[in-house]
Every structure is written in structure tokens, then in C-alpha cells.
Image (cartoon, rainbow over all chains, first blue to last red; front, top):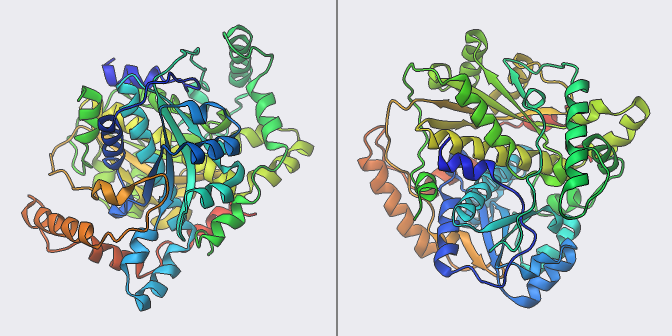
Length: 247
Length: 247
């Protein structure tokens, strides 16, 4: 096993950072790493917003409900972005472009491009002994994030990425058994009851023994709770108002 | 600059592979690496299908229109997957879950989760001197891919990942200037004409001088061509028929 794979397998989300700021050089390397990810048809359909302004950070922190958002070394917000390309077009071509850009296909492309870039950023950061935490919680109030970051048409905030020097080393969280996730040649609707029962047991032990926020829980229970209520219902209309995912 | 960042920055898509197969151990490491990526609320909303069956590969190759799809060492298809969680529920709870799972928010979560996992897989592979190519082209006929891989409800094929031993080392493709992609504190609707003009020049030189498929083109022209016609319009209804992105 090489060092890169060790870094990948050693990943855990960091939710507590020291006061040490990351440097301009580190920021540049992280963004460059993000940009070198594969991109669908070369569209590079993302923008990255680095937030250092304390007022904006505090408000993003409120949206996320997670205190470390304002304490971390640096906060990146990853946005799906087709605005840049849209702006390049003359006004008559713009109309044509919109027909294409508003499809679910292009919405998916922009999300995938952005996420690939973010994972490169994550690993670049982790390789420099920084810790990261993804913040899907910015979608708790996607309209407010949109206003705070002044996002134009065809730009959607997908998630934040808090990056900084770790002030904790939490236990590594287990992952689903490989046979539940990996299939050969076609999707096997196999009975995963046994595998998931074992996983639930493993997770229960993890939750009971970890150093912080000990609790009694299983993956199955968590998932049933999570999906039993609709979350962030307004994301749907927000996305459409941004001209994404309309047709 | 450390080795991991060097690997990231050295990325180029590989579209020609040797006959050497990747090993079972390598496959396992690649999938484990994928699984260790961050996941929204721990849902791990993806499945990975490893395709080795020659008949299926040939048909996926036809869909993609890219010959190396069947020549590569191993073909992975990354699918957004909420089926696993849906199946865990009792029939009355299933109804409740569907209301949540069908939202655009959960569609986004599943795509992001899958893409983060795929980029870990990519880097794990590249760190073992393997080459990769993402295949969004599997969405050229998403219905056919769906049938070939026997995907159930709440499972969508997002892209393929061809992984194998490289039989080429193409030139590295330039990326957008960092000032076009990276913003501070809010989205700057700055005039990027000059930056993009320079980038178009850089790219023109790249296309004219690369060892394969030389041509005269710029990014701006490419993007205008690409978005001037609607692509993969049927992805939208396909996704909804899979119960994703309905509300």
C-alpha cells in the first residue's frame, strides 16, 4: 500500500481546528489540485469561493449550525457554475445555450465536475496534514448562502469545505461492507440483511466506544430516521430559479 | 510539493491501455479507497459495478462510442444508489422514504457522494501507476446501460471509469486560469475576457502541438458548440422514472 492510498484510507472528517491559518501557497495548491480533476467535455463547470470575511463566515456558520465553520483555517464553498460559459455567448446565442444548460443532464454534469474537483482539494489538503470537513449543511438555507456569496444565475452552492489544522483526531468511521457496495457485471439484488446486520453491530460498537458524542445507534436506524422526513425541500425550486434542472 | 499533490497535478485521461489486467487486490483497494470518501449524513449513496463480462463491455463500448471501453483492464460503472436504503424499510415506511428520496436535494446528495467516491478511486488507481478515463458517454444511452446492468429503482448510472495500464502518455491538458475559477468572499462578476483570451491562446497552442488529434480550436469555441444543442435530453425522464428528482 502506497502513501497516497494510506492518506485516502486514513480519512476522517475534522470538526475542530487550531487557530493557525493556512497559507496563500496552500490555498493556491488546493485550488490547483481541484482544477486538475477530470471534467466532463472540458467544461470545468465549477467555481470555488474562499471565504475569509468574518461576517460572512459567521452567517454561513449560522446556516450550517456547525460552530467549526467559523473557527476553521479557511472555508471554501464549491459551486456548480455554468454562468461563466453563458456569459461568453452573444445575446442571441445565450437563448440557445439556455435550452441546453437547463436540462437535468447538464445539472448532473455540473454537480459531478464540482464534486470531483472538491475531492482533489480534500486530498491535497490532507496530504499537507490539514483536516477537512464537507458541509452539505450549507444547503440548510441555500437562499441565504446564495445571497451572502452573491451568486448569479447558473451558479449553485453545493457544499462547503472547511479546511484547517486539525485540533482533534477522531476515530475512523466504518464503511459499508464491500459486498454491499461492489457488484460484478450487474446490480445484484442480493439479500444484504446479514451483511448489514454485521455492519450495524460494528457501528454500534464504534458509537459506544468513540471518544466524543457516544451514543447507541445503527446505520439502519439512522437511515430510516433521515429519510422519514423531507429535508431541504426548497432546494428544488431554488435550483430551478437558477435555471438548472428545468427540463 | 508532496508526492500526492504531484500525482494529482500529473493527471491526464488515459484512452489507450495495455492488455495487462488489473489484479483482484488492486480492484479491492480501488473500491475501498472509493468507500473512504466523505459521505453526506453517512448515506454512502452509491454502488460500483465492475464489468468484466466481454458481451456487456462491448455493448457499453457501443453506447460510449469510445473503443478503449472494451480494451481497458477493468471497467467500473459508478451509480447513484438509494435503493439499498429503500429496501431496508418495511412496506409502510417505504412510502414515507420515497417522499424524501424523490426530492432534488437527495438526488444531489447521491450524485455528490458517488462523484467523491469515484475521485478517490481515480487517485488510488493513479497512485498504482494505472491510468483512468471517466466515461460520461455512458449517458449517451442511459436506458440501455440501465438494462445491461440490471439497475433497479433508485439506482442511476452516472459514469464509467475505465482503469488499466496506460499504453500512452498524452500531454497534460491546460486548465482555466485560477482567477477565473477562484473567488474571494463572493462571486465576482469580473470581466474575464482577457484571462479567457489568454487561455484560448494557450489551448490553441496545445491543440496544434499535441501528439494526437491535432486541431485548431479554443475553449470558447468548444463551449459554444457544446451547449448550442441539447444533449442527452432523455436523461431527465430516465432519472424521474427511477424515482429521483421528482419533487
